[in-house]
Length: 398
Image (cartoon, rainbow, N blue to C red; front, top):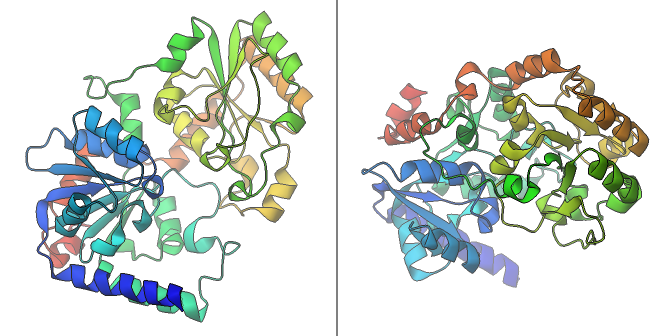
């Protein structure tokens, strides 16, 4: 009963927020359920700073994130602070990468949402992922109807025509609400003018050693522990890294960040999961990427460097986690290692400068990214939002 009353109150406020006049100058940004200053919204937020006709405001639930953004000289407020609520009531445009819960959507009635998403999905997402819940149940349909009326428009950015079709289904959006372009977080790969400040923390810490990054996706949204110790012989791996002047860097998924594994006894293995380091900068510093089903490798394709796929639990993952949009082998341009020894064999090959997947990487890159998505896209996205003067004009532009 208490929960129901809370929901009724929330939706009532959401409807009332439609009455507030919204400023076309104020843009709200948020990411990862309000817990991080990261991903596509972060990069578009940074690019928006150069526009005099935009007032970019970062909204977060985390006081450390709020302090960090302010220390950089930018405007940021807490999710439920008075100033944060006021800015969300006044903003015309909202930029997110997971969904409306990246900000306090209770106060975002009639705002225009731009969902940049947080990667090119290999796994089924949104309404396509029916293992999460029954999206077409009566309760879900009622909740969706009540919520979407005051929230109004949401545009979703896809990276290719193929994904534009997928996003129509995954986000239940009309084709004219899907924008085929690219991800602003990858603008840093093409930045020739020093627009973004990059610290290259990882490269500096490596002190001349080549960097192998292991960046797997989550398992069951963190409900089970990621099996690091079971799938690696870290003693053997560390010795190999010493012999080849390399460092092995582990970055587990956000959902597994609180799982404790001690690597202090290894000279050339480190875990950066809990460190506040931007993944795009990490990828720029990486010489070899090892992944599994994570879309991180799709960003890495734009850098055209060696990839290995360590898919030790492939059958189990498909059965218990999420289905995929593609045949896995068709879109993973790198060696598939099912066991640790196979992984080490492929690392030996790459260490000898043997790269057998150059053409495959180019083919898959062009499948995942349209031509415009293989260059800087932030300015085009900001111009798109500026042109959303009214519903009819927005429809015509798309």
